[in-house]
Image (tube, rainbow, N blue to C red; front, side):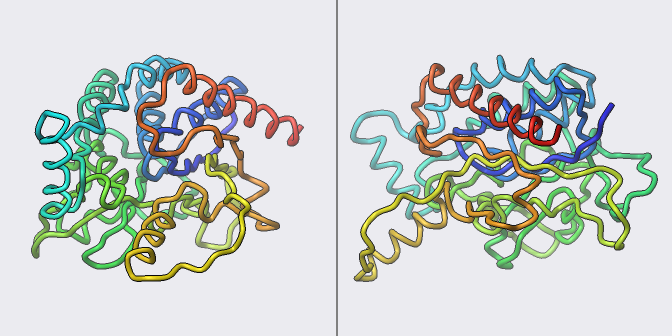
Length: 314
């Protein structure tokens, strides 16, 4: 078996394109000792790590993904065409998000438990000779989260001890739920720590594509490569126009933070040579009503991009 560590970019509902790329790599004989992801990429990363632990074929994740009803992420706390949006506005003001985001638990927890995975203890790597990672970093899954309380990037399960929490005991779904908390769209996750409460949101605010997360820190050559899959698109070309007024500035700041194309230019960076870039321009990252026909096109786009990537390596 050929080994590759894997990094998956956040992309909201586009995450099925990530899965398409990964299935091609798996079919080519690659396995993934460690997988990292942010936001939508964290969902796919968790599935990959769990399926590998159970010895399952990764292609089985497609059926699970297609059964996910993304529109349920848009459920309001109260029913009704009027009371629903009103309850969302109230939740935005009082809780920081229009929607709860808790639909994630309805499909991710059963999918993980079906293959015998629930907490990070189930994904601990007990035997990893030659690694430069510290003992507390030896897990097959790493999830990226933005901590608003301390204004730092959090890598889970690595950083749980900093909050007085036992990494092995933490549910994987909780980490993924925090990583996908798009600011103002989904409610932030409030984490009870040994010295108060920390607020966690979408890791994409600080590291939407953490391609260097598994790079060695001791100067030694890597045992195997790290490859990444990106689903962001380039910013549209348009006339340059200034942004005036505090309200417009705030709206544009939010759009920039949550946009799916920022940091998409890899240029001559070495990251570009180990990145599979998938064309997902037809679907915005927050188009939660996307149908399965469009999702399958994204999946096939991911497969095509990974195939082209492997052809370049041949």
